Length: 466
Image (cartoon, rainbow, N blue to C red; front, side, top):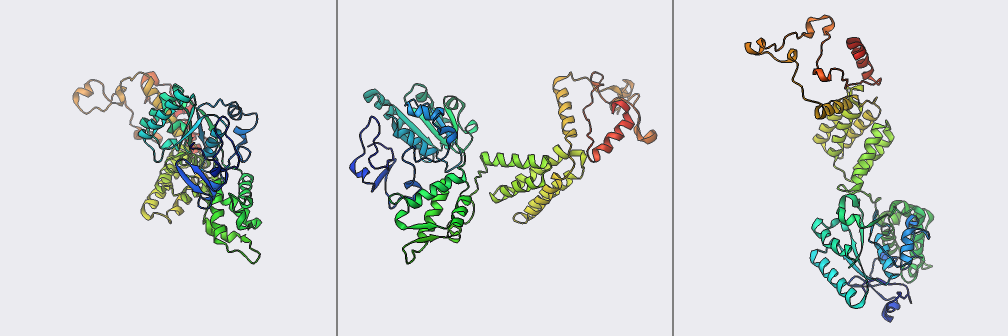
């Protein structure tokens, strides 16, 4: 029996046997090695598209003129990685590809499988190719959960054509998939579903009497549907799971109709599901948006991304550390008070914890976002570091050396040094760089905030050199 999931009555795989009459009846379908009745399978599983005509969204990769669609139609499937948020159709696409090719579909979940399972799947693929000249699609769901050794098991068999590899991941494959395997795959990025797509999927589930909720005569109030689409956040699985729970919880009225209200949807799914993984892409993307909002002087943008991180359970001390770095790197001496404020926020969060710790985080975020900005001190250090790495390391000039012994004084250590406090204004011109770098100017103050006064002071002391 093929380990491919069929639902549509009478559907026939090209080049292979038709489904058994038991499958055609719609009372039973297969998913891997498990069997589900339509009554017991979750709604999200029952409503999984069985044909490309049923698939909703991802037109940017599945349009009629797109390379993936043409490859599928010509039965010339390359090794593929589907990358995108949960509930956007990655697994469904892999299964649909199998239904329209002559290849055997071998699903493996990286959550539960190991090297032994991979080797068994490869051995079966080798036998299938040798005796029946039938190719195998090896589908690995959650491929990012496989370590390097496990991914390496797949590589040689992708190279020699034993299997066509299709992987699905919610994490950036550039970081989570071995470079050799990644280089042999075409990466297709799936986007979060549009609200109209989620609405279409929900409406189909409400109307379908065999796989969906049609037999329960469920009806959704318009505002309930809008609330469900909003709370699903582009994830079809979340929408269908919440819909099923709300429908089952609603009592049928005298007319045998279950009226699904906003309250029913809210009870089924209390809050929006954050698309956030503290160890994955969402973590880095969100903190990047937060940093860029502060740097760009947008308190509103910075507060929004701060709220997103806090709502998703991000470590508040991680956020505080970024604020400290922002204060030094992006505000610097344009507002010397920024760094103490950021450090104080870090100390406050460490001291009081959450939820109250979010208040000093918000205060510091707004203070930094609304401060004048300058990265002059940071860039000055970068320029100095560049010279340290690339220019010759000249000896410390004699007048800057510390003469602590008679021998050192006899060698000229400290000779000619001008003690600044002995001069008017506590300043006197002298050179502090090695001779080979005497013309270097690392710190170039901006005209922002307190740094404008620093720039004027340097010009007064050093003239054109300042």
